[in-house]
Every structure is written in C-alpha cells, then in structure tokens.
Image (cartoon, rainbow, N blue to C red; front, side, top):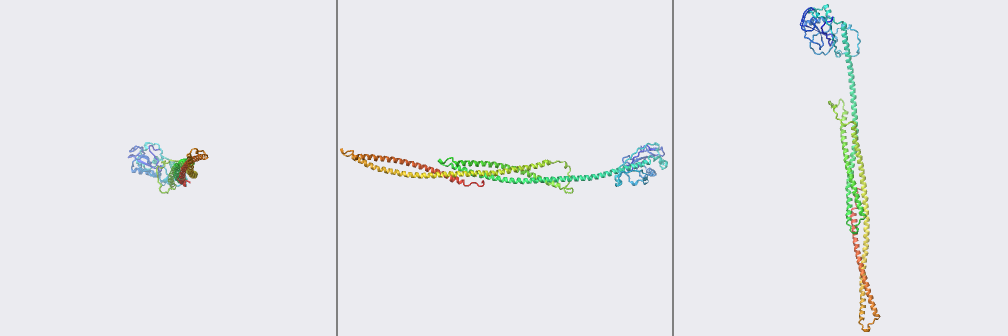
Length: 556
C-alpha cells in the first residue's frame, strides 16, 4: 500500500537516493505520537529526496540513521542515504556506474539503444539532470506511528514499509534514466559534431571572407596603382606642356618687347619726315607705308598682348589642374601605401590588434563610382587643359610667324618706298642741279650780252655825237649856205638812225637785264629747291634709312 503524506523526490544523480529524517520525540507502536517536524511521518521518519532544490531538515539522531541504513541493506540498496542539509552544487549529477549492483544487470528489460556503439562513452561528461518525482498515494496515519523497536527488519515490516514500487517500476525508472542518458548523450554528441562542423564551416567561411577581403584589397591596390600611373603619366604631360607653354610665353613676351624697336623706327621716320621743307612736305607713298607699318605693328602688339593674356590664364589653369593632379596623386600614394599594407596583413603579422567599434564608424566620403569619376574628371580636365594649352601654344607660334612676316614684309615695303622716293628725290635734285647749271650759264651769257649791249650803246653814242656835232656845226653856216643838201639829209638820217639804234640797244639792254633778273630768280628758286631736295634726301637716306638697315632678326 502507498504511504500517505510522505514525499519522494527522485535524485538528480540516480533517481533513487533518499533521505530519512526522524522527529525529535518518537514513540513506539503504530499509534505512537510524534513531535518536532509538522510533516506526516512513518514511525517518526520521513522520506526525503536528495534534490538540492528540495526542502532540507537538520540532521537527526545517529541511531535512527543506522537503523534506516540497515533496513535499506536488507532491500539490497546500493545507494548511500544522507540527511538533507545545504550542500554545494554537485559536479556530476548522476552517480558513478560502479555503484550499481551487478546482480540486477540480468534483470533489465531488453532495450534497443538508438545511439551508435562506436561513439565514445564518457558518462562523467554527458550526463544530464534527470528528475523523477512520482506522487505517492496516501496511507493511514496509524502506520506512521511506529516505534523505534519496530524498525527491526522483520518480513512483516518489509512488506508494510517497502512495497510502494514494483520491480517493474524500478526497472522502468532505471530504463527511463538510461534512455534519458542516451538521449542526452546523443544530443551532446550531435551538438559536439554540429559544433565541430560549425567551427570548421565558420573557419572556412571566415578564411574565405578574409581571402575575398584580401582579393578585394588587391584589386583595390591594382585600381589605385592604375589610376596612380594614369595620374603620373598625365602629370608628366601637364608639367611638360606647362614648361613648353612657359617657354612660348617668354618668347612671346620677348617678341612683344622687340616690336617696340620697329614701332619706334617707324614713328621716328614719320617725325623726321615732318622736317621736310617746302614742296617736299608731301603725303607720298613712303608716308602712307610708314603709317600702315605703324598700324600693323600696333595691331600685332594687340594680338600678342591678347595671346599673352590667354597664355597667362592658361598657365594658371594648367597649374590648377597640376595642383589637383598632385593632390590626387598624393592621396592615391597614401591610399596605395595603406591598402598595400592592409593587403599584406596576415593573422601572424605584427601590429594587428582589436579596435572595438571601428566597423561602426563610417568615415567614407565616396563610392567606387564617384571615386573613379573624381580621378577621371581630374585626368579629363588635365587633358582638356593640356589640349587647350597645346592649341594656344600653336596659335602663339603661328602668331609669332605671322606677325613677324607681316612686319617684315611691310618693313621691306617701306624700305622699297623709301628707296623709290630717295631715287626720285635724287633724280629731281640732279635735274635741278643741271637746270641750275644751265641757269648759271645763261645768267653769265646774259650778263655778257648786257655788257656787249652797253658797249654797243656806248659805241653808237660816239656815232651819234659825231653826227649831231656835224649837224650842229652845219647850223652855223651862213645864209644861203644853210642848204638842205644831201649831206644835211644824210646827217639827219644818220642821227635818226644812230638814235634809233641806241634806243633799240637800250631796249634790248632792259630786256637783257629783265632776263637776267628772271634768271637770277630762277637760279634762286632752283637753289632753294635743290636745298629742299638735299634736305629730303638727307632725311630719307641718312636718318630714316640708316635706322631701317637692321630689323630684329629674332622675329624673323
């Protein structure tokens, strides 16, 4: 029959360990009274499990403990009973296998174990806590009051006290524990295998992830190296283009300064030609060409200044692009060094350490597309600026050639005009000199003629005086002697003739003198014109052409 109000708690180690506790005062017989613990007891004793979570009581009398142990030995129990008291958590929840009596091994029911027999047997590691707390049926209170003398192991008492479970229940309890042990061990083995497989899988996954990261870092290093080489190539081209443009700019500045010499020559030629005199102060072809030459030089200077400003602006743009490339190259070199170091880092490398929370810090400012686009834009900008610089450099070279040719051609044209004008002036001067010589000769001849006329007049005056004297003397003839004879008539005619001759010679003398005055005036005019021509020749030939003998050869 079931024993009422007793508690059976299956132990976590074997499920069969029990603990008996007796009251402070125990009386004999079934109706004996009990004092002490308020729990219902059997003969002053109570069953307690050894579960650490169960209730605990203070230790009882050693004699009672020995009696309980003797009763359990009669039943063939192999477990050691202990009194319930606070004790540390056991390291092994199941009892050692060696504590089981070997006489019961043949009476276990047949059971098919599900676990593999080839797996290792480690009972001290793979046991799991098993709890079996069956509920005991009530029994009469009279049977609780059993005196200590009734604890003598008689058969009647054994039948009364220890027939609460059948052997099948005992075997079933053991089998349940074994099955649960096998299940726990199987779960543990499966957990161990899964854990091992998980460790291997995670190890392979982490190694693969690290290999992928290393590969990505290598690809990133290659990309940085590619863009770095592109930047270096473009930077070298930009530096060379900048140097060439700087040289062309210096050449343009030197050419611009050298245009001041022909401009000054042209202006001085114009200023000198303003000193021409008289009729030679003419707006001739030379002056026209000189004015055109000055305009051409000024136009060339304007174009040179415009291209010089463009060259200065282009140099600034080139230096800006070069600065961007150098900055990008510096960043690329730093990133290349860092990523190359990261690419060669291994688990055994020095300097590796933990940096907690670094994966949560997002300090990135670009993505691969924007990163590549940034460098590509810098390279494209540099290429564009370099192409513009090369075009501007070609334009400046062409401008230098064109302006030099224009100024040189017009310089030659002005020189040709000067040469023609000098030749014309020299020819005019020579002709004036010829005419002046003729005038001088004519003046001399006229003067000689005047002198001869005067001499002739003087000579004719003597004839006139003789004739008039004769007539005057014949007027003194007396009376009838005053005859108009042929002599008288001839003398009168002679006087008239000589007088007329003298008047004619005097008129001719006046005409000769007028001619002489005209010749003298012409001589003066020719001499003045000759001086003007000589001055013009001096200006054009000596002053102007002496400056125009040398033209800056650098422009050519």
